[in-house]
Length: 293
Ligand code: NDP
Image (tube, rainbow, N blue to C red; front, side, top):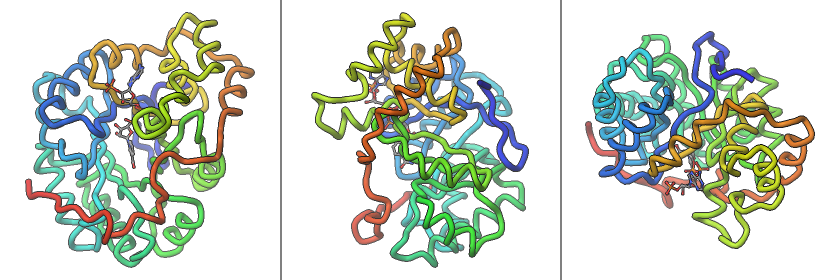
């Protein structure tokens, strides 16, 4: 297991990062500063989360040198199309208060308007060539859509950020990513979405198998899930606004899961996603104005 992953273009990225989806802007500065204080060096945000400015502020307040922090953000579908995406970069960089973004993703493929997706991806390629971003990637891209994207673009995405947790681990997506040298990054890595958007009587946090493994190591289910990703070679970006959880979710280097334990967690996959079907994301239903910087 390594704590740093090397992307296909040679850029180094921390394997374990900090997510801020649903973190209200007024809590984001403190959360990000806390995460950086306990050791996270990768922050994952998105234009659509409405908290890029506060992520930038948290980074500034941390006092940690910008060069030591890996900033990842995502363009929203309302800013797709070539020129719109170039402007989307300016908006995100402006709010974050940085000249260069480490990793810029397309948040969702717009399968109903794929030309716009391709236009936006070509803008990412230009931003990469111009040194405005260090790496580019995608999110929520399924293998069929990946093939369509690869057929029309020049640079293979460095990262595909997708829903991966014990109840929905998408082995087919992970396999397709790996075949193209794409790093799979797990969103909702602890299955948070199974609790905030599912049937709260059965969540990854109270799963008996994960709990048994956690007890065997004197750890929490959350720590076991984060560790599971890292040992299987994925990047993971757990989110919390609570200082004790922010610290605990990062404290995963002092124990090791056995091959049997990894397999038992793999076997929990239900094949049922908790997040939205990527094909259902359309401009009609998910348009959102992303404000200027
Ligand atoms: P996580 O698996 O990170 O779970 C977060 C949820 O679990 C929150 O409700 C949090 O609440 C709670 N939690 C955090 N730590 C613990 C703990 N130790 N024990 C019990 N509960 C805990 O899921 P997310 O969906 O938040 O995903 C993480 C990140 O992935 C996001 O922040 C975002 O950056 C990214 N993401 C990307 C998506 C995409 O489409 N590309 C979609 C969804 C997420 P609390 O804050 O109160 O601790």
